[in-house]
Length: 186
Image 1 (cartoon, rainbow, N blue to C red):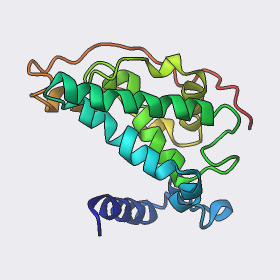
Image 2 (cartoon, rainbow, N blue to C red; image 1 turned 60 degrees about the horizontal axis):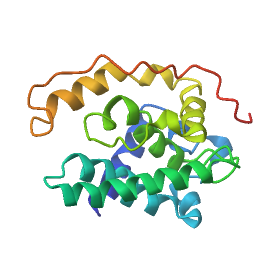
Image 3 (cartoon, one colour; image 1 turned 30 degrees about the horizontal axis):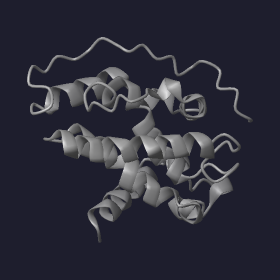
Image 4 (tube, one colour; image 1 turned 180 degrees about the horizontal axis):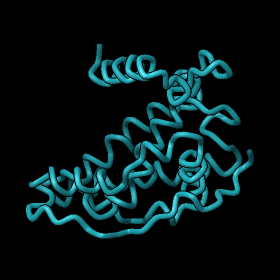
């Protein structure tokens, strides 16, 4: 198995072991509606290549050229997602899938970590109204808020990448209220 496939396999096994199938898109009402559902929309490839990996390629760039080659497609992808989510609640319409949760884990870290730490700062997530509302929508699903610890996320990123942040200083901001109304269709 490819490394990403192995990680997904472990994540799914852990979700089953801890009785958290809903998070991975396999609850009774979503049986079989996992990441593969989003495949036809091109979501997994777009996410993996340009967003999920893009923040790291940008953040760990060691030349201006490499940085620009990574950051531009990253924001092209965010622009695409902003438009894509303008007429649908989730990535593939009204169905919440694993692809949504994978995207959520990247987007929830975007403003607190990737904007400053990885220099992904052409725009902030808050500058994308549909994406920002989408993150708040997913965050407000039952049980999700209890799993998101922004202070811990920031401490990990800012404290563990010495080549990117040699001082280990963790910024106090930004303050983000994921509980604000998202105004997306129920």
